[in-house]
Structures are given as C-alpha cells and as structure tokens.
Length: 56
Figure (cartoon, rainbow, N blue to C red):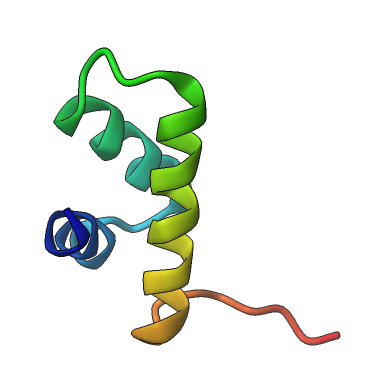
C-alpha cells in the first residue's frame, strides 16, 4: 500500500490530484480511510521533498 501511495504522490502535481488518484485506486473506500491515505501521502511527500512548505 505504501508503495502504491508513493507512486501516486510522485506522479501527481497537486494534493487534489493525489486525492483523485487515491479515490480512483481505491473505489468505495470510506471517507475516513481515504483521509488516512491522504495523510500518508502528505507524509511521503514531505519525506521525499515533494511538499511545498511556505515560509513562516
């Protein structure tokens, strides 16, 4: 599952695209489980340097 989410993060250009790809990859997934996958995707994006972090 982690590798699948990582691949989605790598090929997506935005968080919305990540969400859409996850929803397509796992149809019928409950919203709270989809939210968990989105959190995992954000963590993976941060770890791989793909996350945009605005200056504070």
